[in-house]
Length: 202
Ligand SMILES: Nc1nc2c(ncn2[C@@H]2O[C@H](COP(=O)(O)OP(=O)(O)OP(=O)(O)O)[C@@H](O)[C@H]2O)c(=O)[nH]1
Ligand SMILES: [Mg+2]
Image 1 (cartoon, rainbow, N blue to C red):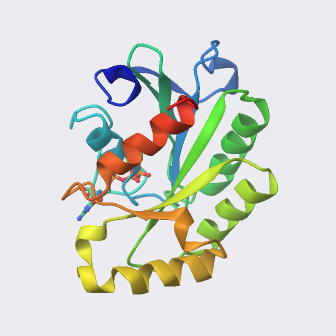
Image 2: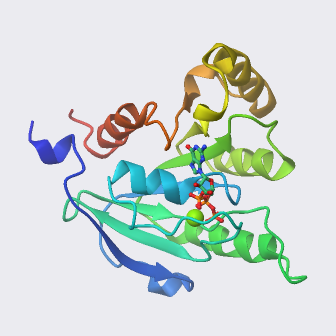
């Protein structure tokens, strides 16, 4: 087993995509990072790649507006940073734009290996979170739920929060991994999880 099959040694921004015709034309697997605006998708990508400047992080919601492709280890896989849903600005229904882009992406892309669906560990999932999980389930897109910002709750509350999420999302607890981009909780575990999905032989 080489290092490149277990560790992110290189991560580079390749492109932002707003039109589906501009998706990368190669066979490199896509690992998609989805979730509500501000849930911590870009911070998570930066933490996985150990590069705080890779994806733009912001306190203001709606920072990521396109599909951003980050190439890992010169071609092992792409991490795809999605625009967050649940964000409405200037009267524009961003969710409609989101849904149209995402539906096109999922219907066209042949290279999706895994969706990492982020939800905030502290809050009951909103209707848009439920819609996302339902969409992935109905369309048989492989996904795991990553519960973000686990540093914000006491360790003793972790099982209660995971139970709440499992029950609201109607999925098994073993399909939810709590993590934190602030204190690194389970970042290595998730990295290994991703590599196992990409390289089925490890
Ligand atoms: N405490 C804590 N804060 C976090 C964590 N991850 C992200 N944040 C903060 O949450 C805010 C949003 O983070 P982003 O990574 O930009 O969120 P996003 O999901 O990419 O947001 P959009 O691009 O708007 O969809 C920032 O202020 C981050 O510093 C975490 O694990 N713990
Ligand atoms: Mg973002």
